[in-house]
Each structure stands twice: as structure tokens, then as C-alpha cells.
Image (cartoon, rainbow, N blue to C red; front, side, top):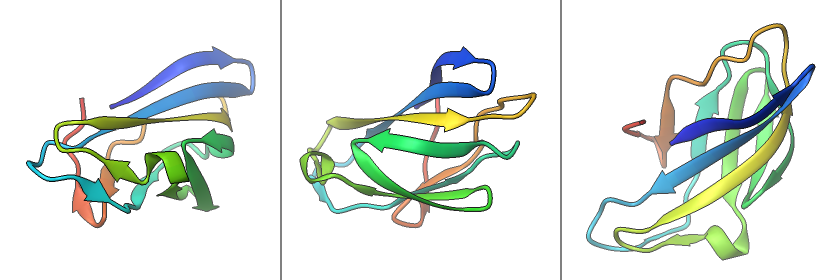
Length: 101
């Protein structure tokens, strides 16, 4: 799940929830997505972002490294935006396209 939790002038707060729908825990992951309008992550909790252009790659913090079977972890971040702030359309977790809501 992706949502904008707050939006102001040139910045915004975002939230990403990663849900593990598998029957086994997932330990260690990488989440990749691309912002469509030049947004940039400036601070994140729950993961460590690396951004190259519009593409963001997130690795877990120690406390979000394992996602239990049927469980979830939440990442929050502060970002900068332009005149628009559309949501990313595709997320991949360990290279597999995620279902988004």
C-alpha cells in the first residue's frame, strides 16, 4: 500500500506498507519503485533508501528485516515534490511485481 499522509507546498509525508501474503516469513528484502514526477526521498524510517533519478531502492532497517507470514511492515518517509505529486504505479519486492491497493 502507498499513501500520502501529509502534503504541503514543496514537501510531503508518505507511507508504504509491505504485506507478506506468503505462508512463510520473508527475511531480508529490497523494495524498488519509481516516482513519476521527480519526487525525492529526503528522510525515511523503517528502511534505508537509495535514489538514482526517479528510481528508489529501499533496504530494511533491523526492525523491519523480517516480515512474518501474513504480516506487514510500515515504512514512512519525508519527500520533496514538484507541482504534482502522483503515486508510483509499480513496486517490486525482491524483483517480483507487487499487487498494490
